[in-house]
Image (cartoon, rainbow, N blue to C red; front, top):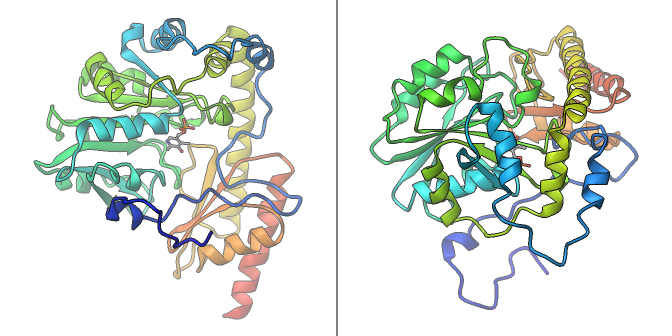
Length: 370
Ligand SMILES: *Cc1c(COP(=O)(O)O)cnc(C)c1O
């Protein structure tokens, strides 16, 4: 079927006008997949057994999952009713934007940031407003505060910012929150929280209690390595999550995901997680340092990925798509953002020299062309 074929039934013209989501290409050659910020490690010990123990897939899972929610809540010093589960934290982003913002309303986020943000309001008609990052690839919180209007229903903060890397500092976050109306929802998306090493970075558990309009999002997809199972969570006001549940697709979190998440929170699993995170953080810092030595101005990298800016002025590459094409040609997939830069996930140890060599060769070729 061709891409522009019309459906045989009446559909919304505004929906049909939107290009369908395209997942990053699957690798076609042996190489590394560094395009989706996935975890290169296999699941933590005990996860496979926990999943296999859920043979009851002829039954719907009990929807409330109170034990898992209580275990997560304990981390934040709150009860299970403050914890909301969904099939990935992206599902919670979708629910919150839908619950808060209708046609005529808007929601704000920094840009470039998580690629899902601009389309969250599509079906409801809420207007997405991306506020450009600063020159150091951080949220421009002053500009974001100035962009708040009567119609702003949700503000999404991504810390550390995917794809560029810097985390929000706590003092900056607090200054920003003081400028946000108390009845406007703020979502702190901490999908990469476990990788953050900046001691000044804001941490959801430290600021949640002071801000009733704040929801903190986390996920089992990235550090915990359960991306394919689809389970993430929000922590915040129970009434906010009752509204989110009203627009959620029911029964989306599977019992297998619930069991895997609970097994991920045992002391043994957490100890192993901490070791793996430390390995990935060390690899990240080594990769960033090597790329900076090549002259790339890699912004502060606080997630499990690094950012190579597109720039004609030095400190980056002149064409993000061309760099990504060079990588793909060599069998390694990275994520280009046209006109912005290239995000490279921190993967297997063996991928590091491959990445560094490909960037060096690309820069040499660019220099030769000039
Ligand atoms: C990966 C990611 C998510 C969502 O992950 P889920 O798999 O849906 O839990 C959310 N926010 C950001 C910034 C991400 O990069």
